[in-house]
Image (cartoon, rainbow, N blue to C red):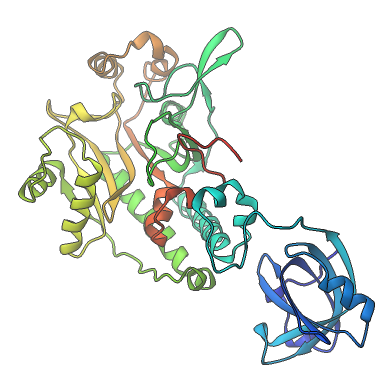
Length: 433
């Protein structure tokens, strides 16, 4: 092993002892007879203090290394209240594990920030920055509690195909691919599969899902490849049961993020855990509120970005950041959404501060009604034969939602561009790295 200690794991028990550390050389300050080298690992940074008179050869080799070179150091750990972490390492031996080419395409600790495309082009260096790594530490934490909460509620994790014979939700926003002699699609969501699983006796399922959507949008809020918590639950009375699970899941994830004290400090954020239950507001009331503020939205239309932002401002005036929009017009929802009479649906969206982060509904579980809705939506039931079969031999009432993780992180951490919330973003123009 080239490392026995991370920077944050060193304790007073290690003082005056020989320990091993390893990482990237973040900065070198050589003032002649002494040099201070900042070494970075995944948990933070530490200071190496190198005295030239003690070992001139070691001094010259270490101080001549380029920034971001990787080294393993063995030395004496000394208490020093004047330096970071309260200790410093006096190197005795070292090994160069990798020499970084100079100049760097992107600075890690430089005060001048590189432009966004340069950062994404060199994402492997961009993620060396403490701030950017903090986002993904929090992302890991909220995923962990999502698993904990859902499994405590009787859900089991499943994994559905990402290559499908038909589009998940109809429409044209799909990536087509050649599958031997046939045409196939990248899955827009696990929707059809998780519904089919409701006919198996697996009453509650969830998946950390990948969405592939060929939307032409190229905004700060859109990705063409994204992740979500996607779930389905059977034997429900109505969509309110699904909404209860969703709001408790969001609350648990928001609370867990608030416990990531070091990462929140690095990001300079303040996370206030929302109160339950979240506000419910019906679509008709939303339209009225927006029209009162001079929006041109008409009944039956989806909310545009400007409308979502305006509604977020209106709801904030009433002291709420999270809110469900319910009872959408049936015509605006996918074919599998359960109708509420002839005009409305049992579909809902969950928004946070003017941004939609989840969408769901009670689903149709009667095959004849499902086929009728497909036809109304200009879809051919013949194209969904394997999906429909699951409804012909005993399907309980069920519902579910898709909850976008990147948008959740945007609102949680007040991040302005969704591309910062996924390791290697895919958008309208970016396919590498």
